[in-house]
Length: 400
Image (cartoon, rainbow, N blue to C red; front, side, top):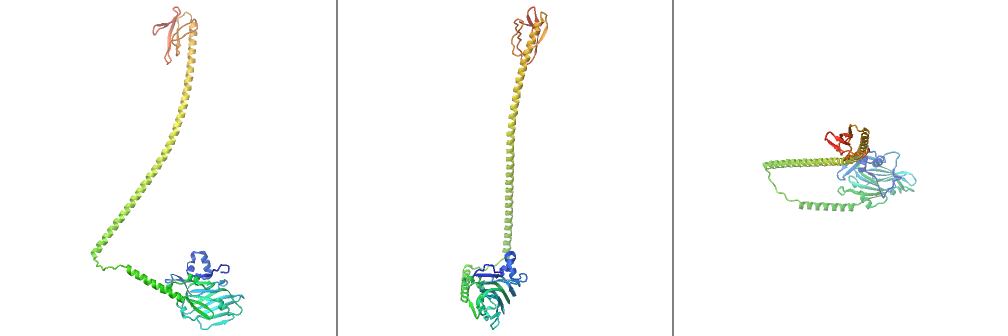
């Protein structure tokens, strides 16, 4: 499992808290599903350690038949609480690729045989306490002649116990171990076990930590005693209590009603402001559109007026030309008629042209008529060849 992984100076193999919460993380789920049968494992919360612990009677790491751990570090550590007895088996491979077993149990004798070695755990303080057991595996493998430690392949624990953590170490170091210490309140103990040597560790340090913790607790208690004021004994009247409760309930109702009214007023103001803003926006858009339309209408009116003025000017010019031509024709026709009549008196109707002032005759060629108004009208005159003049019967005037 860990052959191609980087194994740090202190390498964590199993953690009960991470295994309990591995369902939410895919990497942790793969890791712990290879180590332990997660479906059959049972976890219990410990209020002292404030974490979940694996409660079991038999555990094998890894639980598959073909898989191997391939842990290279020489020291293995197991944290937990063991009850009446312990039976640990470590399956190890040496440099000659032979498999051997290291057995630690509660028996009284140690044995060394070709493929396994057993060692008794004599100290009774290991049991029913929170313990960190550190096992130096090369010291056991060196008992087999011509062999040395290479790697740890599997672990078997047979005991009614609570397991918190399993890890390996490259060398024994107190600073590295401080990462995985138990809380002070649990009164933990640590043991370093090698062949024919069982040594209890950190006893003095734990005692000092406990003394410091007790001193801190006492100091906090003193501060609390000084900070707490003295309370006088009071006698209660049920009538006053009821009145006080009634007042409190009435004030609470009033405050709730006021708060609701204030909220409603705020909402109404906000709605009004929004409505006004929307109306203003609509009016602005309408005004903009109206301005655009007015501009377009003004331009169209100007263009239409220009076209009408041009048409009027053209019509006036045409009318003038037509009137001038008609007047000239009328004059010419009148003159020709007068010359062709001779001495007989005839009534002649002549269209009076515009701009003529007097009537004269010079020989048999020219004729100029009286000035007329702008409106078209006809003048009736009679020519008298004897008197050689023109007579108007309506006014009884003669014109030479």
